[in-house]
Length: 262
Image (tube, rainbow, N blue to C red; front, side):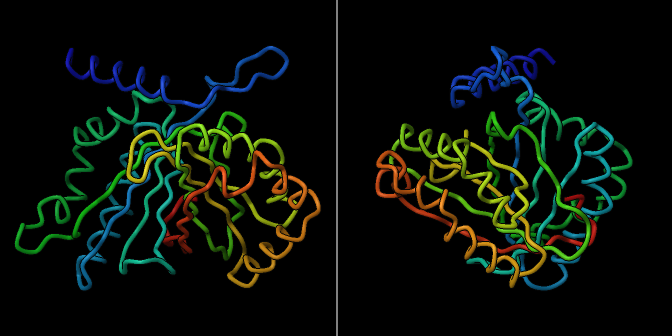
């Protein structure tokens, strides 16, 4: 227990040291309200492992995470991306400590162990998945919580912007807070979350998610976004040009699993 507390405290301290400077409104710092995100990426084998993984996420993992106070949990199948089949799992946490301790608490849950037994005990000769990659992010101070879209048909876009330096990364985050998020809404998108990468590949970078009713609607929203006068003005400011603050963009189109809570 002492070791767990030490690691949790260390992780929280490291997270705080790596976060972008929180903005203040009316003299009040909004850092405390920010969520932390674990974004898991399951690369799967074609065949029965796909069903096994979804059964585990639906029946064991998400209910157990909910029981320890973590919700909403999103699960998304990759519609357009480099690897197929693959699944993203978005897990919001109220604190950095929760990122470290949540799965330990889940593994102490007898119902989780029972319902997830087939997945958890899959033999090495026939595993359910190839590998799982995990990223740790902090919500932007001006967009501190996940905002799920309304239920119904929807497509999600997961975008990662890499930067050459941490300074450039923080400048891009500032750009989102200087009007870019509002332009997304005006163009018709539903912003779901925005996260600053603290731990994970291709650092420094940020990741965010947008929702639309369909791929066609998504395309219309991007056209409206690009034509927006405020976007043209914002993106033409010297400090916000892509050449200075964005070195690479990765993009996935996702569809939610039927049991996804986002």
